Every structure is written in structure tokens, then in C-alpha cells.
Image (cartoon, rainbow, N blue to C red; front, side, top):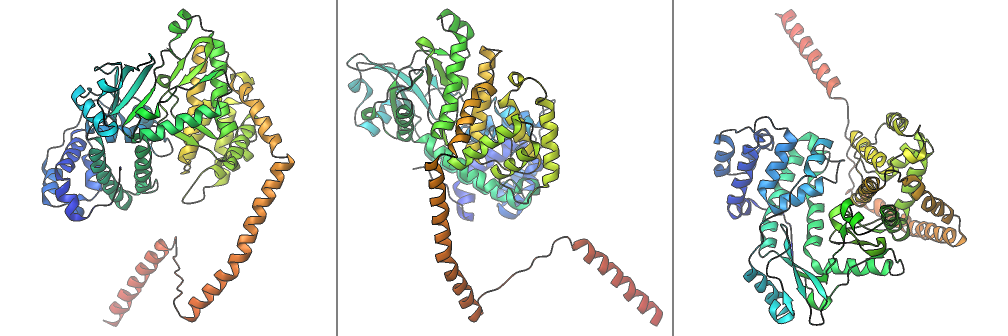
Length: 519
């Protein structure tokens, strides 16, 4: 099982010394020596790494932007850092937009591992070799990435299947990288003020959680089955069949899908598929995921979407899924409603409810910026408003005001943006506002249904009852601590540093004046 832990001095220095050297060397190679200095390695890392970071010559990569150099460094550092870069490419609230755009170009294609390694994984996981389990097994993979590769095979009854096999030794490598990442994030949080506000330690811990899910193929199968149940009665959606008997944590066997890639316009036309119907079915898919089920495919890029006969949409690769609860969904509905109806005050208030922050932002400034953004888009026909693009710009606005969007909500907004972008490519007349309007109307009306109101009242009553029971206990506990003199209150002043410095200077001058006068 993939794990992440903080390292002691011994582990940090000797267990991962070579990997540390490699990481520091790559950072210096691509012109990030200043970052290494600001992390204060001298204080934390022993002489061997100090020598590397301080003595190795700085090698700038000429004529390249800092964002481009960052992407190149991540690619050279390998699998774990590539995955981190892909995660950061979805978080414009954490990094500047130019870095987000650059990280979307990260390549996750590596050379396949040999078939003899595939046989070892099969025997270890399922107790048999591929040639014993399948009527045909293609030893050459048709797709290969950093975590695993995909082979085509055929079952005894003739069904064609696609089999994902995890790369051998990938977990120990990722564990080492995650431990180093956690240490670097801790240093960044302590020494780099502009990074500390984004809580890099929490980002690495969240990344470890996401990566753990991606490495668990059995969990992906569960996601596919849940998704299939949700859309079982929708003829416009198809989910590949899964084969649990041939699946484990490191092997995933699913139905082979031979459809047309959704952005392959020529392929769609040659197959006789109606692009407008493809767009309608795709939009219905993303909207139903969010508004009907609150459980959605969080990585719907064009490579994961296939179009089958009769314009049926098929999603692939369910390794990254997102969830959105009822209350967040209600706030999201209010945000879209406020944006479409030019209500910048309400839009700013909802944006705050959906966000996290360390210090409460200036609401007046946020309202002003939201109004300016809405003014750029909304005074035009509704069909010309691109919801996905507008939501993306709202996310950039939250970053400017030091607000953080919860990861699943961010992934949902990105999914909206991706689907709308694909839709406009296939159908320039596509109107996302018209598509989303019935779902928003239905969601707003649902709030006034008697069952929903009773459920809300029951929740409020339960919380009130819990508070009524707990509050006297808390008061008694505080009273007990006071009697035992174990309760302390710490006051911290802010904004008085300049006043204290001025006071010190005046006191010094008075002291010198008195001494001089006495002399």
C-alpha cells in the first residue's frame, strides 16, 4: 500500500541521498538554484547535499520562460513529479495561469516494460500467466504510460478485452518521491512566504491521496460499476463491462472499446455520426453526473471519450472521480444563476461560500472585480456566453484574492470547461446556457418540495439538539480548567511592529539627549 511519512534526519540523508542529489541537480540545471537557496538547505541537509547545492555551477536554459523550464524539470524527474504536475495543472488557485497552461502539456508517455515483467505481475496478482487465462494475449502494448501499460486480449468465448498492467516497482519509487516531496513542502511552508499561503504540505498530502487511488485498479473497477448503475437506463451513455475475476490492485481487465475519439471530426463524419447529437449527448452526460448524482468523471479530456454507433458516448479511464455534496451543488447553482442574471453582489457572496481562505478577503474589492469580469461577458446574447470559460476566469479571480477552491469543486468546474470546449469544436452554435438552464430550474424548485424541506428541518433540529447537549459540557470543562489553573489565553497583537520601532527610536534619542546634557 502506498504510504507517505515525514522523514527523520537519518532517513532523509542516507536512505534517499541519491534521489535528493538528482532532484537538486535537475532544479539547478533548469535555473531554480534561487529556490534551493530560499529553502534553507544549509540548516536541514548534511554536508554532501550542501556541497551539491552550493558548488555545482548554475546552468540557465536560455530563451525559455520560467514556466517552460519548470515543466521540463518535472518531466525529467519522472513519474511521481509528472503526476504532481498534472494535478497542479488543475489548480489555477495555487499556481499562475502561465504555469497551468504549460503543465497541461506534460507528456506521460514512457517506453513499455517487457512482456516477461507482465507475466510476473500476472502470476503474482492472479496466480496464473496471461497465456493460461486468455485465448489470445498481445505481448506488445497498444498504450504505455508512467504507471502502467495496456494490452489487448481475447477471452475464450471471443470477447475482446483491454488489460491495464501496473509497472513493476512503481510503488516503492513513488513512496521515496512522496517522502522527499513532503520534506521539500515543509521547507517551503517555513521559508517561502508566498508559497506558505497555499499550504504546500496539504497539497502534497492531497496529492498522495489522489495517487493512492490511481494506483488501486480495484478501486477504479468499483467506480466504473457505480457509474454504470447510475446510467443503466440512459441509452445515450455506455460504460465498458468489467471483469472482476481478472482484476486486482495491479491488473484491470475491461471490455475493449473501438469507438471514434470525440475530437476526431473526420472520423466522426466518415462513421456517419451526427456531430450535433454527439454534443447534445455529451452535455447531457456531464450535467446529469453533477446535478443528478453528484458523482462525476473528473478527467473527461478528449482522449478519454469515445463515440459509438448512434452517437452513444463512452467514457474511459475511471481512475479519477469527483464528488459534490448537495449543499455545494446548491451554491454552485446559485453562482451560475447570479452570473447569468448579472447579479455581481450575489455572485461574489456565493464565491466566498464556495471558497476557503486564511484571511477573509475584502468583499467590496471582490464584488468590483466580479462585476468587471461579468461586464466583459454578459452584455451579449445568452448563446454567446461560454459558461466553462467564464467559470475558469472566476477561478483565476479567486486566486488573485487568495481564495482556495476545494479540489473536487475545482475538478468539476474544469470538467465543465473541457466539455464545453469539445462541444464548441464540434458545434460552433452550441449553447451551454440553454443546456444547463433546465437543471438549474429543477434544482431551485426541488428546494421547496415538502420532503426536502422536512429533511432540512430534521437536519437543523438534530444539529440544534447536539449543540444543546454539548454546550453545558463544554462550559463545565472550561470551568474545571479555570479552577485547576490549566487554562491559558494567548493574545497576539498585529500591526504594532512599526509603532514599537518608532517608540524604540524615540526612546534611544531621548536617552542620548539626557546623557549628553548630563555630560
